[in-house]
Structure formats: structure tokens, C-alpha cells
Image (cartoon, rainbow, N blue to C red; front, side):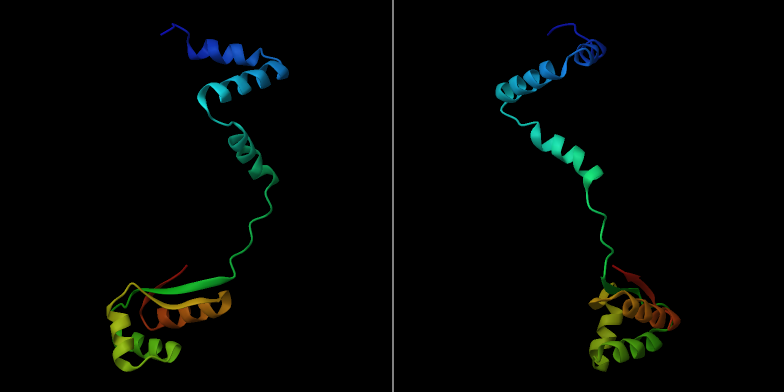
Length: 124
């Protein structure tokens, strides 16, 4: 191995012209069988990326039934239309999905109702 330091390599690369750097990249790609195109495109992508779309569909997840299980079971039945046994199983099996792929406002209302009944809820 050579006694070349990282600083020397960085200094060497800083002094390359654009054409010399392009030739070096091409040689390294051929030598090691890799492509520098993907990382370069990836590095440029965040600056040119489209704005992140706001999430429109949410999943309501019951994380904990709390101390008032009966109230939570009643609300789960009202929200989902499940029978008593199914609603009880859902509440006792927390964390469980209550409703999936629903609009933000509906998910927020369900979360609020369940939290008022004593449950702990997450929106995903």
C-alpha cells in the first residue's frame, strides 16, 4: 500500500479540471465495474424533487384500551359495526387496526371519540 493520505487525495481531486475528473470517473467505472451515474442522479434529485404530497388516507390504530374498556368497546362497536365479541377481542388485542384508509378528518374524529372513552390511539 502507498503512503498517500486522504488529504493528498482530496487535494489532488480539487486540482482536477472538469474534463480530467470526467475521465477519472470513466476509468474508475471501467476498472471496478460500477456506475457513478445513479449516485449523481440521486444526489441531484432532492433539489429538483417535486414537493412531498400530503397524506390523504389514514389508519386508526388502537394502541391501548385504557382503564375504561367497556366505554372503548361501546365506541368500537359504534365506529366499526362489529358485534360485541368482535369489538371486545379488538380492544383486548390492542394494538389493533380500527379503520384503514379513511380521510384525515374522519380519522381525527374517530381518534377523538376513542380518546374521550379512555383509549390511546395512533393515526398512521
